[in-house]
Length: 442
Ligand SMILES: Cc1cc2nc3c(=O)[nH]c(=O)nc-3n(C[C@H](O)[C@H](O)[C@H](O)COP(=O)(O)OP(=O)(O)OC[C@H]3O[C@@H](n4cnc5c(N)ncnc54)[C@H](O)[C@@H]3O)c2cc1C
Picture 1 (cartoon, rainbow, N blue to C red):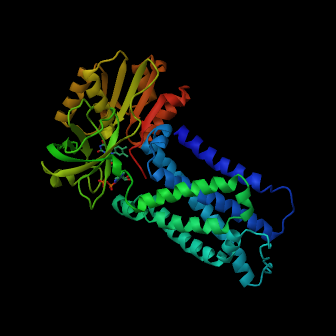
Picture 2 (cartoon, rainbow, N blue to C red):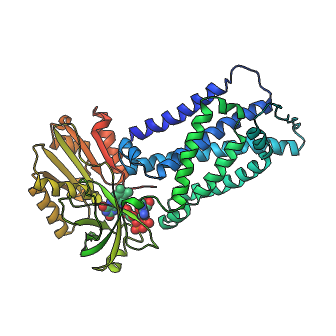
Picture 3 (cartoon, rainbow, N blue to C red):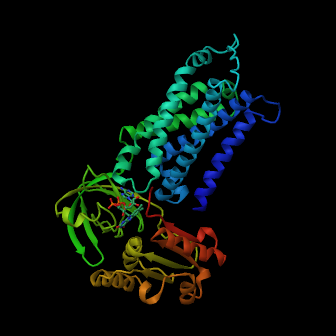
């Protein structure tokens, strides 16, 4: 998470510095309309800048995924850039319109707008003629983008509708790029900020077209078929075993894939619960957590076709320290199952303690976890919150006195992860030693 925060801050501060180089704000006194012009340029630059980076991240570029620590993290950054874009667009909109409303009410005198000087390049004179059109388009694109962004943030708006509507933000973005190019201060093109924004918006436009053309992730898709299904009734976990029709590139233990069982529903992310040892099959453990996953045990049949897209993610157990502590909450056990599967075949010397907290028991499921831990030589601490209390930092450090020598890997509910992370950071563990898979992409 620290990396996302650092990346986010570096980008926004970087844009601000580039803008300040082009616009030395403390050099002059400003009247109200000059101040308005300046604020609109700044909010416009940051607004379209963060939206452009969000569009680039939507293409799922491998470089960002690796640098940020996984696709779940790069989507988290995408979300924060989107929120920032929304906030800056609202400020931009208000500075554009409130003075106009005040002029209409007779509270402010409308300033004279000069013509561009004779020597202005033809392209900028053309942009100047398009101002009215660009302002109108920008206003409508802002309304559209704002509605879609708010829908993306409202958790009770179902994911499947969010997934379908969110794509239309790309159209609003393309219109906002037109708005920005026409209305950005012409002088900026001669400074660093102009070409920088040009490159950023070009990459953002590529992302938007990619998204509108439904091309995101296409090159990572492989056709598969359901080979076996096993439903654990007591904890409502469906085990799905797939075999491939196409060529799966292989994966690391702990990575995940998007599965599309039904094209109308779209892809859902699930951790691959088996290691890759060249067998042409993958195992997934799917918990009935929502309206769609709850129906899967009835809907899926052996022989059904599935599209698998991946692998994605960096939750791959590559810690530098001598030992590892794993903490799993509920269905967050899945990446650990995959790693245990791998370690059973290729043992290693690290001491690994797995704290598995689960409130709902399914004997068969638990047996398979115990068996996997035994085969992988991992010390399993099975914790039932009602009987043993919650897994917390005291429980972990008591059970693993040498915790300082361990990397911590967490997968489970967000609040649970936060409390474990806080506990370790209070004890002074460095942020790079705590790894967390975010089971949420929105
Ligand atoms: C990286 C990752 C790995 C995961 N691994 C597993 C796993 O191994 N086993 C497992 O049972 N669950 C896993 N999940 C969670 C699983 O994706 C959701 O529970 C499932 O998609 C819920 O779908 P639903 O329509 O039934 O629920 P809903 O009621 O629609 O949603 C429940 C929650 O899941 C999220 N969600 C819903 N649909 C999607 C989607 N298409 N893409 C992303 N998030 C979505 C929503 O934001 C919501 O918070 C994982 C999630 C992520 C991000």
